[in-house]
Structures are given as structure tokens and as C-alpha cells.
Amino acid sequence: MSNIVELETARGTRFEFWARQKPGKSKPEQTDGELFALRSGQRTLYRIAALPPYFQYYGYTHHADGPLTVEWDENVIEMSLFYRYAPAEVAGEGVTFLELKGGRLVARPKEAWPAWYQSDPDRPQLRFSPFQAWMNDPNGLCFIDGRYHLFYQFHPVEAEWGPMHWGHAVSDDLYRWTHLPVFLHPEQNLWSLGATGGAFSGSAFIGPDGGVSFYYTERLPAYDLFKDYKEVQRHVVPSTDLLRPEANSLVLIDGPPGSAHDFRDPKVWYDSDRGAYRMVLGAAIDGDPAVLLYGSQNGADWKYLAVLYRAPEHFRQHGARCVECPDFFELDGRFVLVMGFVGYTEPETGRHNLLYAQVGLFEDDRFNPLTPALQELDFGTDFYAMQSFRAKERQIAFAWLFNWEFRKPAGSPYSGELSLPRVLGLDAQLRLTMLPEDGYRTLRSRALAQASPGRFICEPGQPIELSLTGALDGIRIVGRGGEGESFTIAHHAERLQVSVAEDTGEIEYRSTPLTLENLRLFFDRGVLEIFANDGAVCGTRRTYKITALTALELIPSAATRVDACEAWSYHSVWGD
Ligand code: FRU
Image (cartoon, rainbow, N blue to C red; front, side):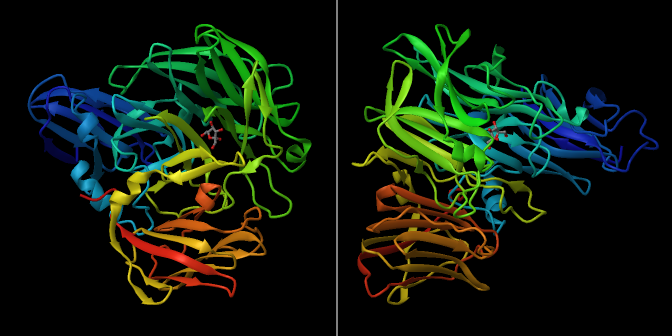
């Protein structure tokens, strides 16, 4: 074979990769039945004799001591994701990403991640994003043995949505993450079927005995993105190190009458008063987006109980297909229901796929709202598939910063980013509030200087925070980069509005009416998260156009009175 590299490899090291035959290389000439091999001296330990034209997952565990030689035919093999790890060490060290490139084997252990993350001028530095390839929803969030686990919807072979896996990362503080091996795979090779589907979204469940397991949806091989697919619910018990599924069982196959192909994204909890398990699922009932409630005595046998929530007709009439990623949790003695309405376009503003919350009571398996209307959770819309979990007596949430409206320019090695970790609360009007988890303060590097009153000079590429209190009605905040305005936030006609460089004006990103009392924003290489009025009104935008700020300007109106104002530059969470 054309390339050979020696690699020091400890006993127990595991290699995992996704590979196929390079497109256009229909019949490789002199392959002698070897396209990739791992050898110890003369001994062949692992060999790929033929590669399919579609991606396939490969894994090898080294049950011997000493170095390995890695040999490959770079003309024929195309590898997408490739990493190795020592199972006993991986919780701290993470995986080492590998790349076959120009006859070399490039290794990127944890020490090399800062350079990798920081070298992309459009890659957020305060937020989680996958090392490479595609990510969407956060899944399986949990706090186990003092560490936060994040799983996420992952398509390992390219920076586009496709057959779904669960990626995995771990953190001590919700900000700095260590990449772990892929946790869940689709039931079968969907690339070979020319299908999509796989391990869809789901969540962690802490059982009555304190043990953690996961419920998720498997979308069976699907040949149409919008209809005629089948979604079933599965339960996974992980290995004690949480690296692998130890048992994976099918627990729920069919939805109730009136439901159709959308039947997904389970969230499960244990109701200790009843001594019973409860599950919510996103679905549609007779075409209306709905949340379904299921019950179980053992977590394995599930019974349909009721429609917990059914969206008003308005949503179906404006394109909503179903509820996605329902979240349902107790907070300060109330229950909060969070839902994404996929397909919905709001007629007044043109915004789509919005996320809503409603606060109420959960009594006798009924959700009785205490607030009359749905609360819009994010007026900027790039905050979707939010999932929350309980840790250290706080309800913490992450969401996927994406709305399918804009996307990272082609050529990026990855797609998909998560929000800052947010702590959830309820205010006096029973609105769900979201504020960044306090740990962000430890990441501040220095206060930003003002060139003139209200004009802060930024360090391009470094995340910034601006926080204001006062009577802020009428204020405008402009983020500028070398090539022009990156974003503008304005309090105008009683609402907060936000626009970014790529906006054409067709969609209006604006909040519900408010008197603006305080505002905290974070801008991070194109990600803008806005928290107003103590987190009761939030807005998130992702811009890909002007992502390095040189200045931040506050432009007050005659009515504006700023009482306090500070701005900070930040370190990267991917720093040393
Ligand atoms: C939301 C969603 C979920 C689904 C997953 C598939 O973004 O569509 O409903 O489980 O993504 O990747």
C-alpha cells in the first residue's frame, strides 16, 4: 500500500472510523485485497479488503502491546471521522482525532483542540460545537458523578444532516467540553440503503434507584423527509462508564389513533407520588401539533394515557407539522411545557420553526395552564430543540443555534453549535426566564475600553459581553466589523428587534412588547444571544457574514437612561 506510518499504541486502545471507497474510484487497480491495515510487525491485526461506495463504520480494539503500523491506500480510501482512545483514560483525555492526509497520519489529541477551534474565524469560542461533521439537537443531558454529559444529534460523515447518531461530550463546568466516542448508531447502515433516519432525539432518565438510562426515537429507514416514515421509541441502559449502550430495547412502536408518522423525542420522568413512569412525546393529532402522554409501571411497558397538549388550529393552518422535542419539567412547584412547532411560519413576521413554553399544573395526568397564552421563547429563532435537565438544584438548558434559514458557508468542517448553558426560572408573571449559567464570569479576560462614551473597542475574534441596566427604551446597539454592520439590536415601537448582515427584511425578528429594563448580550464569532429583562425575553441569532467585531456602539434615544453599563472581552473555552 502507498502509505505506512508507525503509531505507538497502548493495549486496549480503540480505533473507530467511517470510510468508503473514494467516489470515482470504481475498480481500484493493484489493491492486492488491502486498502487499510493495522499491523504489529509482520502480523496483520486488522485489514479492509474492499470498501463499499457508501460510508460504513469500522472499529478495532488493540488487544496487544506495542506499536502498530497503519497502512492505507490513499487513492482509494476516503475516511470521514476517525479517532482513537484509551477507554480507561478517555473521560479525562478525550478521544484523539486522526486524519489521513497527504501520506501522513495527523493526530489531534486534546492539546491540539484549542488551535483547531480557534483557527476557524466563524467558530464560536464560548459554546460547544462538534469537532467536525454535523450536529443538531442536544440529547441525553445529565449530571452523573459530578460531571455533565452532553449527547447530541450527529451525522459523522459530513457537515450536513443525514443518518443520525448520538455524539457525546463531557464537562466539569458546562462550558469546557471533552469529546468522547460516538454513543449511539442507527440500527443499520442507512447510507447503504440510500435512506435517512437512525438514532433521533431523546433524553436521559434518572430512575427511582438513581440510575441513568436513555429514551430515544429510532426513525426506521426513511425515503421521504416529510411523510411515510415510522418512528419507534427505544430504551438504552449505558455501560457504567457511559461510553457504550449495554442494553438497547424497543419499548413503544405505535402511536394512538389520530397520530401519524411523527411520534418522537421522548422525555421521561419518574412520578414519585404515583410510583409510576411518565413520558411525553412530540406528535400531531389529526394534523394538529400535539404532545402525547404515556405511562408505565416499569419503564419498559408503556400505555397511552392522553393528549397532554394540542396546538390551536392556527398552527396547523400556518404549516406546523408536529411538535418536536417536547420538554416537560417541574420548576418552583409548577410544570413547564416547552415545544418546537416545526414547519410553522408566523404570518405577521415570517419567522418559522418557533419555540414556545407554557406554565401550568400537572394534575391527574392533565396539564392545566396557569397562563393564557403560549410564551415565545426566542424572538431571534436560532434557538431550537431546547432540552433541560436537573443538576445541583437547578434546571439547566441547552438549545441548538439553528433555524434552517441560514447556514455555515460550504467548506466548513462542521455545522451546528449549542447555546450557552441557561438556568431556567419563573418570574412573577409565570414567564419562563433563561439566564446564562454563572460560570461565564470566570471566562472574562478584561473589561473593554470605550473610545468615546458608548463606543467599545473589541478584540476581533474574541467573544464579548455587554450588559446594561436603566430605562433602556429606544436604545440601539450596533456591532461593527471591518466590512460593516454585523448586527443591530433596537428597542423600537415597544419591541426588541434584531437584524444581522444577511437579512433581507423579509423576516422580521422582533419580540413581544416590553419595557426594557436590562439587557445582557454575548457575541461570539457570529453567535448573538440576547437576555432582556432578567431573561424573560430572549433572542438568539446566528450570522455567518461579519463574525469579527471591531466595535460595539450604544446609541440611546432621547428617552433612554443608561444607569450601568459594562462590556467584557472573553477567553475561549477551547483555550489552554
Ligand atoms: C429536531 C429534530 C427532532 C428529531 C431530530 C432528528 O431538530 O427534527 O425532532 O428527533 O431533529 O435529527
